[in-house]
Image (cartoon, rainbow, N blue to C red):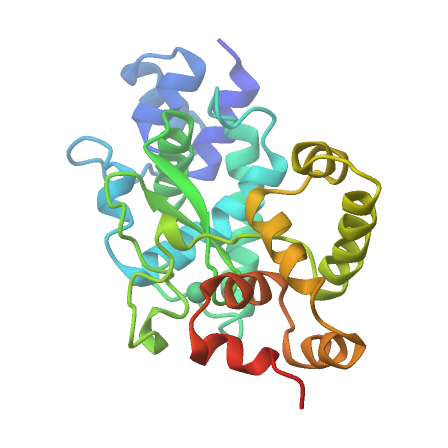
Length: 257
Ligand SMILES: [Zn+2]
């Protein structure tokens, strides 16, 4: 039994069940350690929740996402184990961030408690939750895999036409910037002229099918149109989607002035 870890977990305020998992202590040992340390444990009714129920509300998803972003940077192998030290470090960072956004106050209704943070980390390990990236506002957020149609917690309110815009099918098509894509497109056309195959070019520049297709389209534009694209598109992802969508409305911005 790791006595110093046990003391730390007791002081941080974890539920007995979590302390027992990480230290191998019995319920009685946890209770007497709390007494010796003068700590009143949290009220412990019922089993630990699961992440799916914790992430039912948009506000909770946002809070849990802030925690997870810190956890995934800190944890050693979050897909194979619950890194309890990283849970504590990330939760403390998350708490500071949560309070800083509210003039030092806690939003008691929505703040993510340490036990819930641990549950999210546990369910990330068991692949019950995963991270998604919003194609509109580009934040990363945590979702339960049992809810495949989960919306971005930040911008879903403004997505009137397609409230499932963050769905898997609508994920980001590229992380390259418009300038990088344009530069890539001239390299692609050079390599095509040299007689290389599509597969060879894609492998050389690590391009996906969609990025390659977008580069091919960009080749047909002259300098004025390309400048126009740079002025209009802040994100490469939006540019690729516009280039590949083929609908008149969405390609209209690509016409030269
Ligand atoms: Zn969003």
